[in-house]
Image (tube, rainbow, N blue to C red; front, side, top):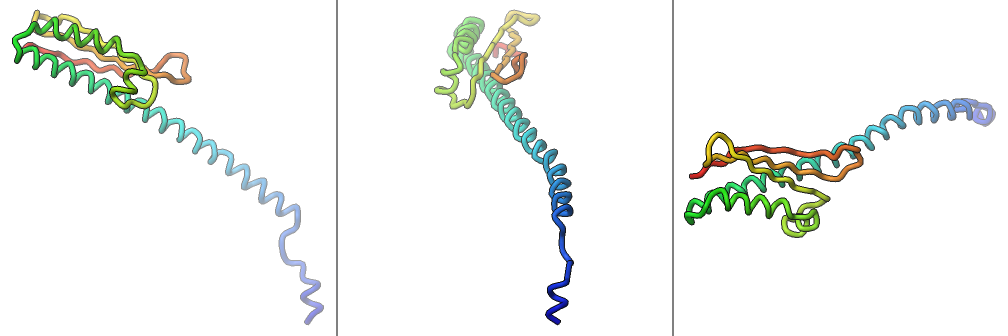
Length: 147
C-alpha cells in the first residue's frame, strides 16, 4: 500500500497552474477596470447632484427674496437684482464655508424681463471643476412673479 501512495501522480502540473492563473488574470483585468470606471462615475454623479442641489437652493433663495420684497413693499426688481449680484460674487471658497458644499463650484445667476414688468426669468447655472476640457454644468430656469 505504501508503494501506491508514492507513485500517485494525481494533481496539477506547473503548466496547468500557469495556464489557470493566466486565464484568471485575463478575466480579472476587465472586472478591475469596471470598478475603477464605476468609482469615477459615482464621483461625477455626486458632483452633479451637489451642483443641482446648489442651483435649487439659489432659486429658493431668490423666491424668498421676491416674497420678502412684496411683504415689505420694496421694489421687486431691485431686490432680485441685489440678490443676483450677491450670488454672482460668491467665490467657490465662500460656497464651501457658507453652504457646506464639498468641491469647487461657481454660480452664475441671470435675470431677464419676461413679457411684463412683474415677471422675471431666472437662470441659475452651476459649474464645477473636472478633468474634462469643457467644464460640466447644471442649469435651472424658472419664472418669478410679483406677488
